[in-house]
Length: 154
Image (cartoon, rainbow, N blue to C red; front, side):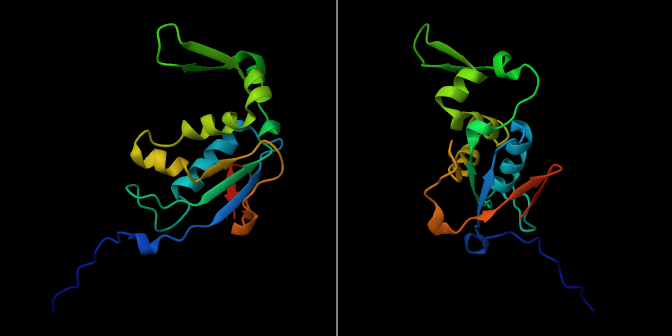
């Protein structure tokens, strides 16, 4: 009697089921928020996760200007960017970034936790960050995602 071969399950595009989540960043430490959001964006919370496919869900982060940081990061953490031209290096502290572009705090933190390739860039398009409490994605009926004790609870 021949044993039936077990094939490794490989998801296809029809197997992908995307959900929209909304996260309130008010008072949540930046790194903890970013790591949980990155896992949801990649789809690592799903049993059908495949590292070569974009299996993740959409995440809306609201109240990005109220994200918490510890220690002296408000003045000591520096964000650099370069225009590509000679002498084009620019820098902003976390406090300056929070005042001018609070969404970039969360975007940069999540970007650092996503793979640096085509798949990572595609994954980041599912992240929507807003500095205030309102967002224009009400039609998608996002589910609230509570972050507690380092675990995301959907």
